[in-house]
Length: 257
Ligand SMILES: [Zn+2]
Image (cartoon, rainbow, N blue to C red; front, side):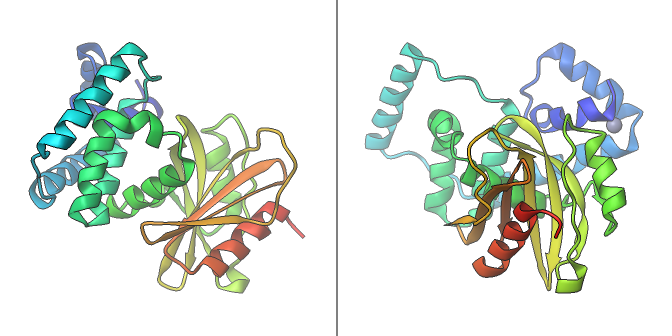
């Protein structure tokens, strides 16, 4: 096992969700790998923070009954299985949201309703951004040079994402990271705008007309902008204002001028 294989499995490993063979392979790799040791320790401390800082509630009887009924239905028609690491991500996102009701919803969601939530790419991009911010892992490759970031990402994906820098407009490239969207590895470009961090997820567009004017959404205080162009699909997520995010995503989707 190498880092490329071990890293995506570390969250599931931390949650004890891997089978004994996979766990042993991870342990063997982590034992000899400084990077993965750091990542494993980060996940362990994040996990203990969630356990100690997130309030825990007992479900009221009515909700209990609804969850049981939903589970029974799910057993009749099992939902497509999502990777275990996603559950960790939802949990993390819930911890960030800060409101007890939201957290409770996330817990229920992770246990029962995840196949519905999982289809929501907006929620997934926000959860990714939140997890990267909370886990302090915004960039795997920290560089403002697109000639460094692009090959780093290309060598780890089966596509080559366009990478642009907008330092001249106050939106410098901070680096890139490998994340997951919809169950697939996705290129993530990280930009800075003043004190804000902007994540842009880039993946090949799956047909349809290019739509370089971004559609936007707001979820739990984060703005999300989505556009397609230059053969790619672009998802921007940040706590930066919607107009800044929209113009960045629109420029990326238009391609180099
Ligand atoms: Zn490693």
